[in-house]
Length: 322
Image (tube, rainbow, N blue to C red; front, side, top):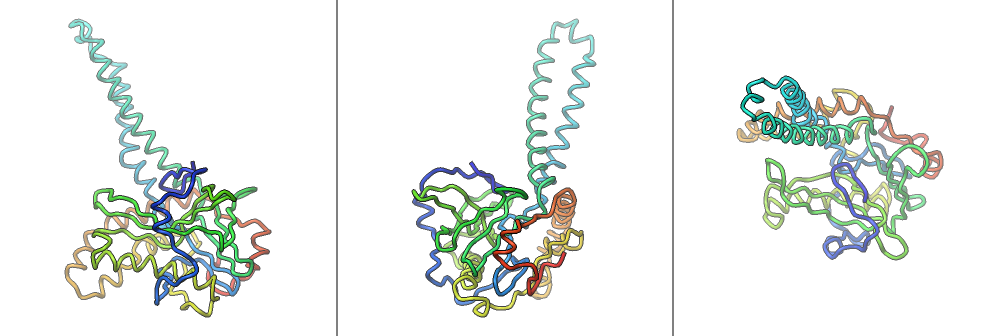
């Protein structure tokens, strides 16, 4: 099994029929208008350093800990106090065993919820500020950062990468369906031995085949086409990066990351969009704060010297100043 930020993925298995049906072949174009959608950390003539699809999601683990996790810990402490300060009346009535059983059950539930919150916290915190991917057109390789030190980078030839659109069912309070571009790493027997996501992440509130759903999915195809053209045709075939992602940890950058797209909503002239922005402002601000707090506990990723040499990335032409 492999954990990729939000989900577990089974390894040492053949490619599924759904994955084959959703494959994005690198030999064909997927959009006439490639766009970066703020997924690029840095760019040079040799390589493109991009984010994974979970980059924007950092902070949810902190929220999971602060809401059910921290609340469950407090509740568990209260239950423990009640169990150690049981009123004598329960013993006199012969109900002491039942009282301990009921409290013990709720204590178990609270500890389970607290454990889930702590687990979510450790996924966000004490990890890495980001997990970038480098597309190197010089040696036609993809390098996906996993962790510092030996064996911390997944390396796969561009021509052997199996890209597909990962479709997950609707979930969460908003009942949206996430879509990302995922890469499968296959061995000589065409079995899955690794996986990572690349680029942007979209959320479908409508059916994928509806006009609104197709418009959202087009963003995913445009983003993948941006990467594909860079590797297949070179940097001159793609538009200039609209805005680079920052690798610097700051509250300002976290706010900018989470409120991406807010200016277009405010400038749309649509009062309904203004209302949506006002309603979403407070939870988005909280998520930005959680994103910043999580990054403060994390380490910066460090590419191995051999990867830096392969990319000739000592001085990128644009972006990524730390």
